[in-house]
Length: 218
Image 1 (cartoon, rainbow, N blue to C red):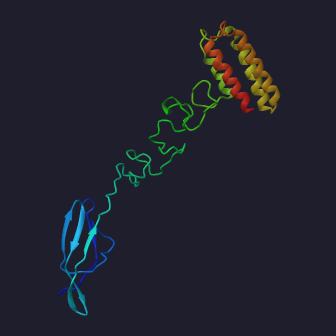
Image 2 (image 1 turned 90 degrees about the vertical axis):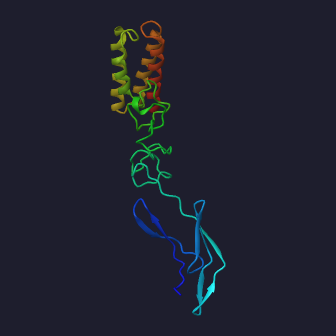
Image 3 (image 1 turned 30 degrees about the vertical axis):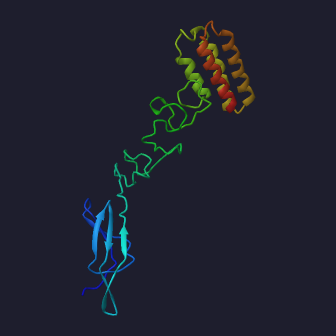
């Protein structure tokens, strides 16, 4: 009679490889086996006790592990992959929201989608009056004034507003924070004075909000 074995090996037809699994609790020879509902049942057979074959009465059940699925072939199983359908072996997730950067529509989670976000990896929440996805800055305020069309911000006062912002920037560069804040407050007062006249209501709200955001960061 052949020796009894407890060895369990599994074959993977996809990779054409065999792998050793956890052994059966009971070694046996000539068992009967069957697969039912995805589980392998092993019953009967013989074991050798002192060289004498002894019948084995135990029934053992082996449940094969679930197959590892890696849809994007990046080495990360789908169950653990933060972008299971897009190749991203580094699993980068800037905002730690569980969605990888390559498949996250809003990487910095600031409410501005990456396609519209000028700063996709900068969380501008609460400091983004013009909704460009970037934290409001003095330089950004300068650029906004220059690019606004005449029908919402009259060219007649653009130079005056821009001058105040330029002076604020110079003060910031020289670390004269109080002077910078004073210039920005003067800017806000001028915008308020021209609201509904040479500055549309919507643009006035945006410029004031931007200026206040800048002041809060100085």
